Image 1 (cartoon, rainbow, N blue to C red):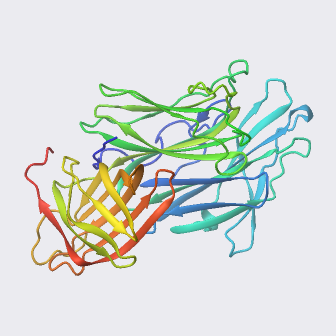
Image 2 (cartoon, rainbow, N blue to C red):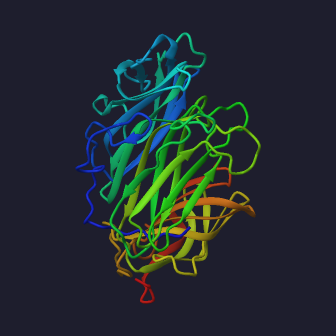
Length: 437
């Protein structure tokens, strides 16, 4: 999936500016509280059958935290007409004293037989200052939805909106939307959430983050997360069985990148209780709590970067002769070797070329100095690995050039994280008159 990332100053940053404040029961809606503007969001969660649970969430180190939203979800005793469950939980960053937080109910759905009430809560905890740029570990406990319901406490999640100086469209929906394929309507399906935006004449990438609860970890319970884009290049992308209590029973945080083709003006997302893989297993009974969308708009200069060398901190070596293009056109060659391991880039999926405050002297070789990219390739010969990287050309003779690399294998395991100045090499940015844009 290829995408060229650019900036558009015409779009505002606040989530659904001017829309009615809502939340939702049996649907998601625009949050009923103001949502901060920002450049992006990160999300993470934890199942809470066993407490305390820890939410590990990383905010970009060069970003400023704008808003921190805590969500939690559970099952109350419908026979006892419990419509509250537990509107308070306790949180801690492990440093300050634990704090009890009261949440706002953002959605309630009774089960078809009236035995249960499924309830979602949200609290804005920004002012507590518990979440900062960098790595955070937030514990959650003292959740008690019902003594009469087994495993009533589904889990909790954090969504952090941050600003890093770039312009992006950040949207958020939340509530409580239940789906089980064997239930009577309307509990059979969730309601698709549609994000609208201005069209562009190039492909873009949307980052999507979803909170879904109650997908069992006791064997496969099939699910589908479906994305639909409009426009001449639009289409349907379906992620099968990517939910399964992967944050612990019974909570899932799914983060996905979705191609938004040129000309598209909307992106729809829906979580489904379906078995499209014909596994024969009973599809999941699930509750959709929140979805966030970030659409990238970053200027990229026309150019390319070449060179090679070793990254000081781990002696990971970027082979000499690599070449990467800001507009993604071929060739895009990159190989990284370390400790008997090798990563070979096969597809440069996205690139950002920026002119920062780095002084390229002498000489100034290009209208940019920093190349950031993401791509896919082979790790030790196995396909499906991913790489995120940044190369900085600080001018000649290359002793101040730097790089950062993060490589994961096909299973998502981090196999290399390296950052530092380049040694035994040089990075060089170039003007490129052959760019298509």
